[in-house]
Length: 137
Image 1: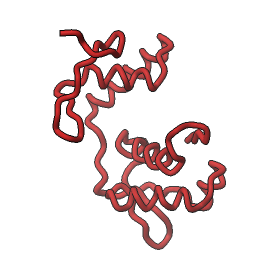
Image 2: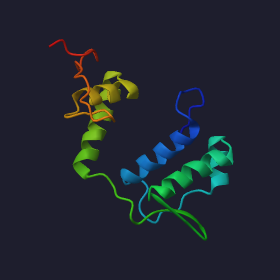
Image 3: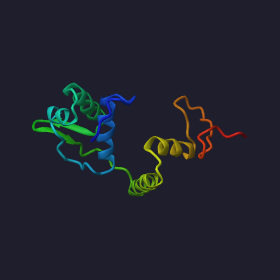
Image 4: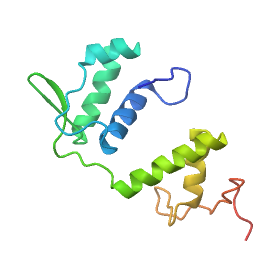
């Protein structure tokens, strides 16, 4: 895992999102023991409270289970369907080969996502996937 302290995403959210991604992609299987809060904080050069907050959030969401002996990936945590993982890996490979960074790949994916809606339920403006600008209909 890598954490950026200079980005706009708080370290707690980065730890949370990366661990969740490892779980849903199947890279952290059910029953796998995670490093202790102190150990992961030391490895990532973060405060233990930052890691503890991420672990607690993942536990509340059902991805982790804390019990005597450590924190483990929950047996009820589900992984993403294999076709979706394969397509995501293909997108990552193609993006890397073409020099497209992660933020740009996400922006393009959002632009082509069908029936994308905002949190308010209102449809989002359709974007031109090549420029990221709203379509001029």
